[in-house]
Length: 121
Ligand code: AMP
Image (tube, rainbow, N blue to C red):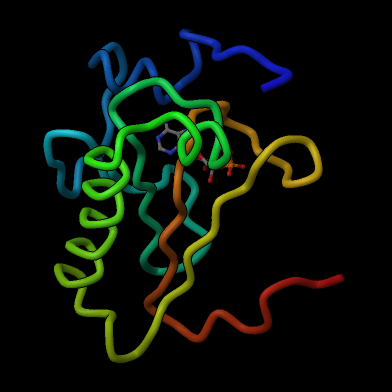
C-alpha cells in the first residue's frame, strides 16, 4: 500500500454511526447502504466493517471469513432487490486511475435499468 488508511473518511464515520446512512442489510463483517448520489434506480454500496483502503488491500489482508461475508452480503442485496434475472453491474473503483473518491473499500451494486456499455472510453 502506498497510502495509509484515513480513519476520518466518510464510510469510517458511517461505520462509527457518526453520520447516518440508509442501511439496506448487514452481517457481522459487511454493511450495505444506499449511495447518496445514485447513478441508477438501484445503487447500493457494500463495505467491509473493518478498515481497508481498497480492493487490493481487502483481498490481500482481510480474513477469508471477511471476504466471504462481504460477497455474501452483495448476493443477499441482489436477492432482496430481485435483480438476479434482469441483471446488474458491480464496480469497485481503486486509487487514482480508478477515480476512487472514498478511501474505504467499497463495491457499487447498480441495477434497475439497462446500464448501457461499461465505459465511455
Ligand atoms: P467512489 O468514487 O467509488 O469512491 O465512490 C464513492 C461513492 O460514495 C459515490 O458514489 C458517492 O455518491 C458515495 N457517497 C459519498 N458519501 C456518501 C454518504 N454519506 N452516504 C452514501 N453514499 C455516499
